[in-house]
Image 1 (cartoon, rainbow, N blue to C red):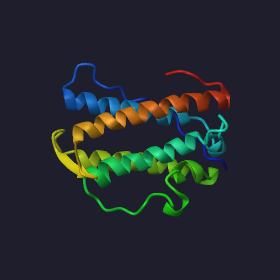
Image 2 (image 1 turned 135 degrees about the vertical axis):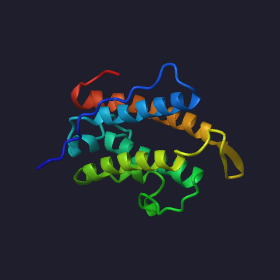
Image 3 (image 1 turned 180 degrees about the vertical axis):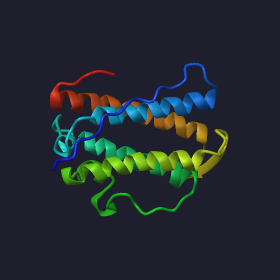
Image 4 (image 1 turned 30 degrees about the vertical axis):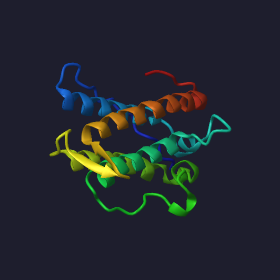
Length: 171
């Protein structure tokens, strides 16, 4: 049996909420949009690189965003010491390079779990809470803004990859 990414309803963000509600709402909208871009595709389709010579594939984007969620929210902000998500011997692009259609369901589930754990790690924190990374001080507010930008950038990639796969376009 071939695994197929499930249908997803995008999480709408508040148009008139306070700062926290707006930032988390938009982040959740971008998160669910990436999953929506994967909906209805098999592991083989998710792993297909459709825009050569780029190594981009939807599965690589899913794996990358799982790593980014973990890195910014859990490791950097919450200070959790975690094992590397992907083989560090394969380089910093292992999330894009080491794709296996047979593990697409696991990779997809890893992203959704990292999102859940990221939200849990910051649930009781203030946007003004800070951490230091490489000598620079970052706020949780900046992490949210960074993650919104990271998703927005990669959703542009996802649009191109998906259109090349099956012609699907849209917001």
